Image (cartoon, rainbow, N blue to C red; front, side, top):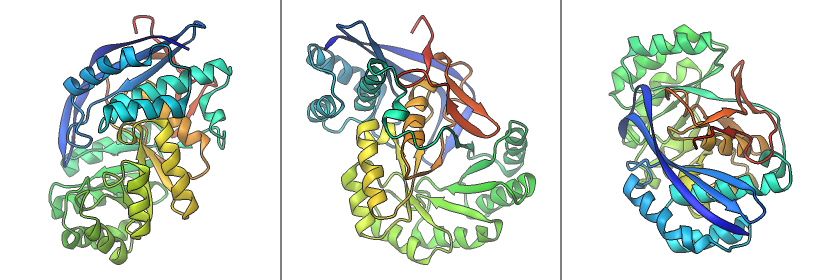
Amino acid sequence: MISQVSFKRITIEMKKPFRIFLGSSDIYQGFIVRIDTDDGITGYGEAVPTPYITGDTLGSIEFELESISSMLKGENISTEGIDERVRRRLRSSRASRAAVDMAIWDIIGKMADTPVYRLLGGYREKISTSYTVDLVEPSQAVEMARSFLEQGVKVFKIKMGSGIKEDVERVQRVREVVGDDKMIYVDFNQAYSAKNALKVIGAIERYGIEFVEQPVPAHSLNELKMVRQNSPIPVMGDESVFSIYDAARVISMEAVDMINVKLMKSGGITEAIKIIDIAESYGIPVMVGCMVETSLALSAGLSVALGKRNVKYADLDGNTSLKEDVSTDGFIFRDGDLSLKGYPGLGVKMKDQI
C-alpha cells in the first residue's frame, strides 16, 4: 500500500544545446517522483516536460503531481489500477502520469526481487541504441559522428529540418564518415509537407537509410499515408502516436510501417506495452525512444525495449547530453549496446540526495 508520494524538481546543465526542428534545449529540467510503501519499498519515476511535443510544462507537471500525491496515499500497488486513476484525474497529462507509472513498476519489480524487463517478458539482455546527430551544420555533424564512432556507436540518428539542401548534405557527410556498415535513420520531427518530404527521401535513398521518422506534421495523417505509399524507405510514426487509440488509427489507415513509442509521450510503461502489443498484432514493429532524460527514465524505456519481442529498435541516448546524472549504477552502454545490471525494479541505483 502507498504510504507517501513526494517529488523533487531537478536541474542539470547540458554539454551543449540540443536542437531539433520543433525547438531546442540548453538545460535539463524535470521532476523525480518518489513513492514509498508501508512495507518500506521505494519506487522512482521521472517526469520531463517537452512542451513543443507533449504540451507538458514545468508548471503543469508540478501542479499535477501535487494534485495526485494525496489521492494515491493508501492505494494498493497496481499498474493498471493506479494508471487508470491517474489518467482519469489528469486527462491530458503525459509526463506526470509516466513518472507515477514508472515508480509503480519499480516498486513491483523490487517486491518481486526481479528486474522489470524480466517481468515484461525478458526477451533480450541487450539492444543497440542510436546516438543522435541533432540539427547542426554538416561540418559539425561530421565531428559528432566521428565522436560517436570512437564510443562504439553502431546506429546513427540524424535530425532533419534545416532545409532540403542542408538536410541531404548532413546525411551524405555522416554516411561518408561512418561507412557503409553502420545503420543510419533520419528524423524529420514534422518538418516538411508530404511533397517536400518525398523530395528529401528521394535524395537520401542512395545513402542506405533504414527508415524515416515523422516526415510531416503530427495531425496530417493523410499526408503521412501519402509519404508512406510513395516512399522507397520505410516510414515511422512518432508524434502522430501518443496512445493505443492513435496507434490503432495510423495502423488502420496504413499510414506507417513502424511506430516510435516514448514513455513521456504515452504516459508510462503500462500504456506503452498496450501500443507495442497492438502494433505486433498487425505486424508493425516499434522503436522505444526518449526525450532528453536521465538514466532513470531511460532505464524504464530500456526495460520495455529489453522485455518486449516487438521492439526492433531503441533510441535511448537522452542522457548523453547531460553533464551529470541522477543514478550511480545499473544503466550500461558498451560497444553500441544498452543493458541493465539486473538489479530489481527499473534497475538503477539512485544517488543519495535524490
